[in-house]
Length: 187
Image 1: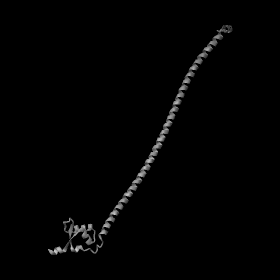
Image 2 (image 1 turned 180 degrees about the vertical axis):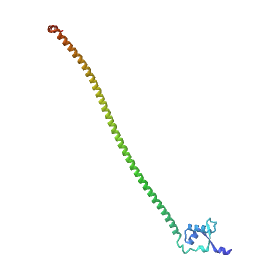
Image 3 (image 1 turned 30 degrees about the vertical axis):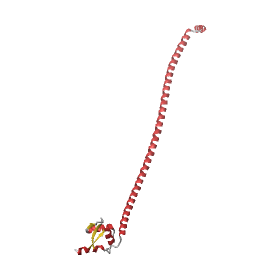
Image 4 (image 1 turned 120 degrees about the vertical axis):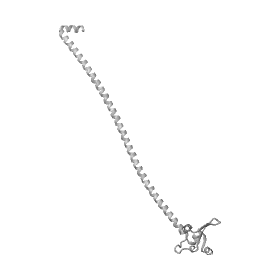
């Protein structure tokens, strides 16, 4: 039993990392991977039963724990930079799409304004044509009225002319002396 106790050493994960020249998180992963016995001390700190052969730093692992942490940090920074670059590209693409959409909206608005202006001009022309049509209809009605009046005047003039001719014929038929007498009397 004494031989077993001499072959192991109880270390915290921090002490194991320092002894091996690795980070604390690497020491924790190593202990779990090799299934070393663990126990919590009275102070609440976890300790691992590490074989003495594993306490010494490995010759192929001669870097300190800070380099592991720096590697982790640099990987995290690289991932973050990649994410930021990707998001920046997406934001630029979204801005370009928004700019194109805004240009299309402005062009559509311009076309709508031109169409509204054309419609207003056509309505104005239609109003002018309607006024011209009303004026022509009024002139036609007046011309028809004048034609009816002229026709009536013509018929009246014909009747007057016929009456004048009948009277002239009657007067001529009475003879010259009868006409002179009638004129003398004022008939």
